Image 1 (cartoon, one colour):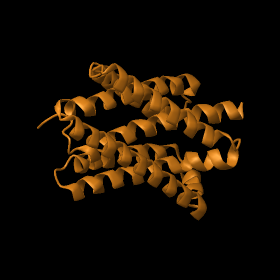
Image 2 (image 1 turned 120 degrees about the horizontal axis):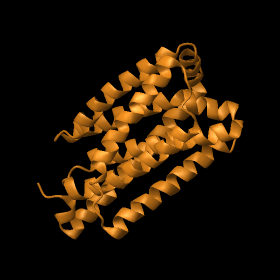
Image 3 (image 1 turned 120 degrees about the vertical axis):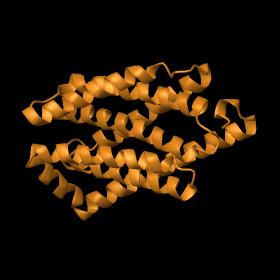
Amino acid sequence: MIAVAQARPSDRARFIRRTYTHLAGAVGAFALLEYGFIQSGFAGAMAQAIAGSRYAWLMVLGGFALLGWMARTLAANTSPEMQYIGLGLYVFMQALIFAPMIFIAVYFTSPEVLPTAALLTAMMFAGLTAVVFITQKDFSFLGGILTMGGFVALGLIICSVIFGFSLGLFFSFFMVVFASGAILYDTSNIMKHYAVDQHVAASLELFASVALLFWYVLRILMSLSRD
């Protein structure tokens, strides 16, 4: 396997173009799904169902973690068809889990909240990506930090659901920093450890980090809007 960083310049450029084209397509599909969920009333029904039981949200997160693992496995498959199935499945699941919060942002906060969150996320992602490409630094050292931070965050989320306490703005800011680190790590990782034909799997990893960043940027703006 020839890593992207060691590939010919033309192959490297093609990998980058394909990866970010697929990422843009995934973001576009995510936005269309959210629009469909809002217009159909599904997002509102899902928000009401989750609001009625705190354990329902825990079940959603558990199912999402399992299916997310399956989607990543499919995207890393050598078969192009399976890779696209994995990416499509992951985008659909992310849209599903975002639906209740997007519904609340649309109907119960300021109209500027959602587009502002999207713009801030795009700007942060562009800036972090530029850092990796300009500095050529290997951010693989963040892997262990992100793993430990991920387990701590997951534990706090589970405890907050079980015991019914709010994690607050501080946790959201922490997760924005965490997601920013994940973007640095993923961008560096796909360049140094992915093969030139793994652009679908690379786009999935980047989409996952972008979605995580968007989730907590949106939560922060929604909280500030209510205050």
